[in-house]
Image 1 (cartoon, rainbow, N blue to C red):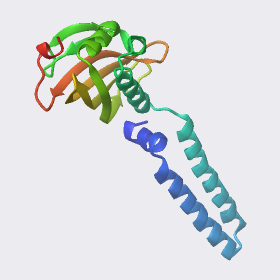
Image 2: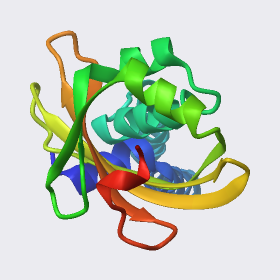
Image 3: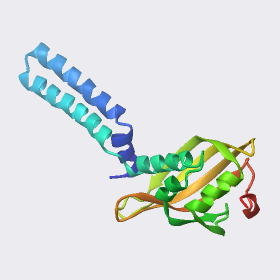
Image 4: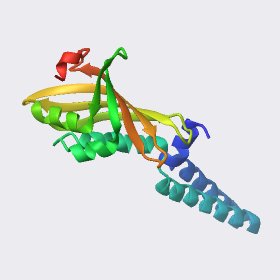
Length: 193
C-alpha cells in the first residue's frame, strides 16, 4: 500500500467514512422509494464499511504516526531533561551531524541530558513535526522537527531531521540527529559545547 493511501485510510479516514455514509444514505433513500430491498441491504453494507474504516483507523498506528509520537516524546524528554526517557528513545548512541551531513559527535542519552541541563534548555515546544518511513518491516524512518525553546532564558528556535531505525522488537529508536538551523542560521559544532 502506498504511503499516501495508508495516510488517507488510517490517519485521515474522514473522506472514506463520509463517502460510505453518503452512498449508504443515497442507496437507502432510493431503495425505499423504489421498493428495492437489495439497494437497502447494500446501503447497510456501505454504512458498515464506513464504520469499519473508522474503527480500523482508530486501532491502527501507522509508521508515520509512530515516528511523530516518538519525536514528540523526544521533545518532552528534553524539558526538563530526563536521561532515562531519552535512553529509551536512543539506539544506544546517536550521531549528531551538521546541516551538511558531517558527523560532529557520537551522543549518549546521558550526555544529551547533561548538555540540556548545563545550558538551561527549558520550555521546549514542538512547532511542527512530520515523518516518513520506508515502509519495510526492518525499516528506517525520518522525522523533521521545528522546536521553540529557551536557552539560559533566551528564546531559541531550532530545526532538526531525526533518523530512526526500527529494532527487532518493533520499537523505533533514534540513530541520527541532523541539526538544520539555529535561530534560522546554520549551526556550527561549537554551539552545543
